[in-house]
Image (spheres, rainbow, N blue to C red):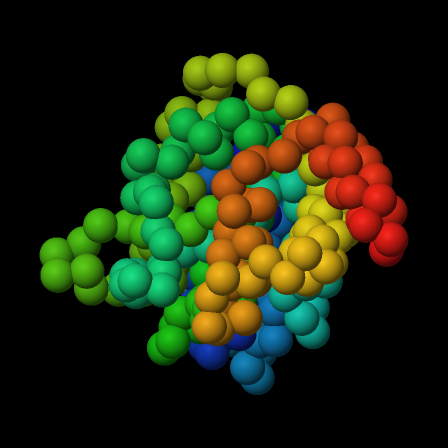
Length: 238
């Protein structure tokens, strides 16, 4: 398997079948075979086929459709959100150029990576970004947003041109199910010790989730962390 085949493109709540077709063509251009739709609005395969052309036909024929984002990314080791909306509540640490090497390292070390694109009008919501381990942006003049297929082209080009040049060796990351167990145990522990130093409990929990995401826990790390959390909760009488 080529490394780039470990990349999945996820379109969340896409509105226009034409854009889905264009994205299928872009995926095919760069060797990405896994295109996923989450809650598409009135998806029309025949309309999408016209913009996919013969180049993207095979990608379109094998497209996967899910009712919710959690199910769509459950088998992924690392999930990347994309956004053009920057602000205090959106912690975007990297532009796509700066983060490309990290993506290359992940897929060259057998990690399945999903790259999420939101609805053409609203982008990814804060709730959808909650599923992401990292969020990236494409710098543009005045932070204007790009057409979804144009943004996809830029990101896949950056990955494709560097795919054979990993800069460091990393272990395989923990899977989403394990990370969710760790998050739930950590929340249990936080509630037991009554450590919620924030007026907005939901925002505090989101901060905890972002903290965990940025740890990039490997499979080995996650087993150690799980054992530690479980032992601590037992000691506290949980």
